Every structure is written in C-alpha cells, then in structure tokens.
Length: 121
Image 1 (cartoon, helix red, strand yellow):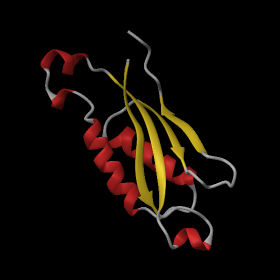
Image 2 (cartoon, helix red, strand yellow; image 1 turned 30 degrees about the vertical axis):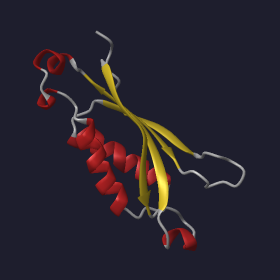
Image 3 (cartoon, one colour; image 1 turned 60 degrees about the vertical axis):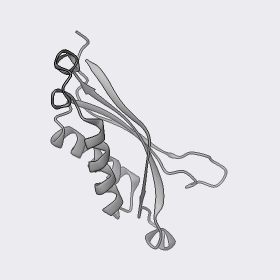
C-alpha cells in the first residue's frame, strides 16, 4: 500500500451554525492521505495508471466551494465519500481544520478515516 497525500488544501466555503457564518465564506484547510498502489504507474510512467491528485483537488475545490453545510462533520463525511467512490480509493484519512473557530486556539477541526487500509505488500 502506498499513500498519495494532499496537504494544506485551502478551500473557501459557507460552513457553520451561526447566522454570521451563513453570510460569509470561511477558509477550511484539508490534509488528505489516500491509499493506492503506485506500482503500475511507476512502471508505465502514465498518469492514467495512478490516483491523480490534481483531479482529486479540483473535484474537492468545486464541491466544497459550492457546499453550505452547517457542520464540519457533514462536510468531512461527504468529502470522504467522494474520494472513496469517485476515485476508487480503498482508505482515506482526512483532517479538516476550521482555523479561528475557537477563540484562543490556532486550529480546530476533526480527523476521520474511512474505508479499509490495505496491508503493506
């Protein structure tokens, strides 16, 4: 098993439960780890044989940018569903950071894992 990752993917979206949060876009920061097997791509040197992280990023930017969820939990779950189903990823670890959501804390957010992490081999 190999990991393709995206770190510090920043996407502006409407997120939150308070009235003021429904009126403005806030920046959500994503860190993603996605299980894959890069051996076929390493042999062929073709983008079609691997998990295209640019395609993943573009899909998430579009989805998150147009979403308007109340809870970060809902947003995180939907993002993982997209990665697992649309990109055929067996396991994903997502960290979602809603910077500035708690006064006095630099970062606040959640970490979730979905799918089954393949064994090394």
